[in-house]
Length: 141
Image (cartoon, rainbow, N blue to C red; front, side):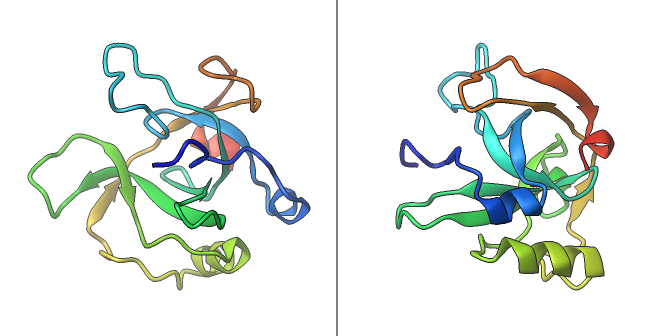
């Protein structure tokens, strides 16, 4: 993962799609910091009480959007809740949001992730771990 994997800029188009700076438990946690893990600020659009679209910048330096779902996978034996990728990252956030809202979004493993609700907090790009609590994701949608 590059140092700028979670870019902090929000374009006008992203703002019109309700993207904002959020702290989401389990997203952006540095794996080596399990003693006191804390999320890093991400630019995200909450899709539902269990789904979120996160702006990422993979190695090719082109922004993409990763659809993640909070819950547990029926494919593995581990039943703890965690973030699961729903599909491969896409470059067109508007289409993904439209497809998700219309119920036609293609998932890599359809119906194999049992959903759970998550909490989120408003964040600023300079906010490492604090943030202003917003509450359950249903309030963030």
